[in-house]
Length: 283
Ligand SMILES: C[S@@+](CC[C@H](N)C(=O)[O-])C[C@H]1O[C@@H](n2cnc3c(N)ncnc32)[C@H](O)[C@@H]1O
Image (cartoon, rainbow, N blue to C red; front, side, top):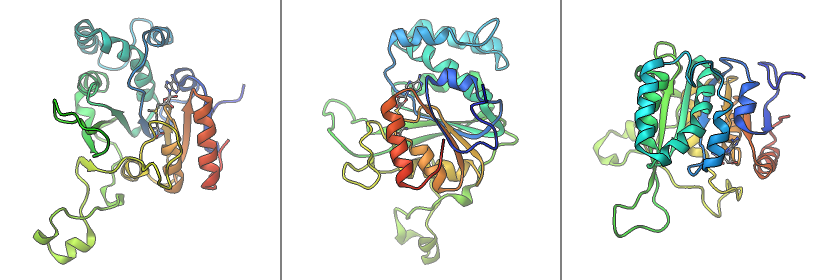
C-alpha cells in the first residue's frame, strides 16, 4: 500500500480513527500539531483505544519513564472520569510527540475540566522543560450561571518537542489593538500590540462567513495566531481531530501544507466543501 503521506504529498484529508491513521504517518514530519479533542469521550471508546498503544512495557517509551508512570497512576486512581478521558487521549498524544519535528510545537485545546490534569500529565509526558504556554481563550457568549463565575474560556496547552530548537516567530503574528490606547504613543497604537497568552476572541458567529454548521467549530482567528507563530510557509501542519477543518483552511490561507484526520463522514464532507470554497487543493 502506498504511504498515507510523504513530504512531497499534496494536502491530505483522511477519514479514519486518528490513532490508526497516526500510526501510518512518519516520525518528525510536522512542525505544528493542533488538537481539539472532544471533551466527553465514552468509556467503551476509551477502553478500546488503549489496545493500540505501541510499547512493550507500558504506554510511554522514550518519554519520562518512571516519573510519568507514577504521576499517571496517581491521577488515575484519584478520578475515574479522568481515567476514561486520559486513556483515550494518552496514546494519541504519544503519537503527536512522535510526529512532531524537532522544532515542532503541540497545541492541545481543552476545557477547564480537563486542562489541569492534562498539564500535569503532559509535563511528565513531554518533560516539564518542554511546556511553553497556557493560552486562555476568553469569549463572552451564551447563558451565564448565577451560582458560580460563568465559565467563558478554553485553555490551550502549548508544548514543544525540543526547548532548544523550537520555532516561534512573534513577528509573524497579527497584532491587536491596545486596550487603553490613551496610555501609549500614536506610533504604538498604529502598530498594535503583540497578543499575550490571554486571547479575547469571539466564538464563530452563527451568521458569519466562517460558519460551516459543524458543531464545535473553532474560530479561524484563534488558529491563525497559532499557525503564524509556530510554523513557516511551506511547513506541514497536522490536526487529527479536524472537525470542520479550521486548521486546514487557515494553514492553506497562510501558505502551509496540512494533513487533516477525522473519523466522522460528516466532518470530511464539511471539510471538503470548505476547502473547495476556498479553492484549496487536497487529496
Ligand atoms: C471538537 S471537534 C474539532 C473541531 C475543530 N477544531 C474545528 O474547528 O472544527 C473534535 C473532532 O474530533 C473527531 N474525533 C473524535 N474522536 C476521533 C478519533 N478517534 N479519530 C478521529 N477523529 C475523532 C470528532 O469527529 C470531531 O469532529
